[in-house]
Image (cartoon, rainbow, N blue to C red; front, side):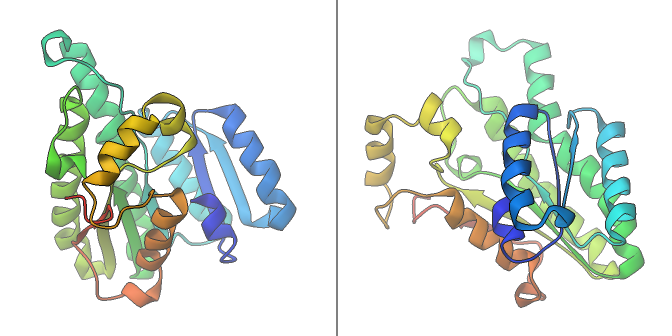
Length: 228
């Protein structure tokens, strides 16, 4: 996602709790334009640190045009074994950061009377999924949040939309869950039978961030090859 926006000559800020992955990405992007990228190591479940980072980005670049909420943990767990702590932690990761980031971004965007907020939900919010009830519940919550915030923020010229990807073949998914057998089962249920890549999803995010989607808000858009 960061790469896609940098290649469009955007100024990009991102946060991550994974220092190693972030350092590798920063090094790669700095070769393109070091002045256009900003990073801070932040635990997105720490709402105060998250909101402060957003305020600092606005100050650093002089404005804040696009927010992409793409924090997730899709760890599997049986319903019988989920504790209250596990459940609340799932919401703290998969749902809460999107609200608190949007809250902070709204304060900056309304001064400009423009902005685009893009929430990453999941096609599982429509399909359901075994061993992922907490994750699916949080992702469904993001759909409701998207529709509600689009109403609240619209008067300030701010658009809020959600992307619902299918099973995207990221490095993490390929290493953890997306086996050849599982991918084949998933692809067999798609109308367009090919792998979904991060680049596919980034193209949709670029569209929703751009003025080409200036009358699109409150929408939850599937990018799943016709799986749902």
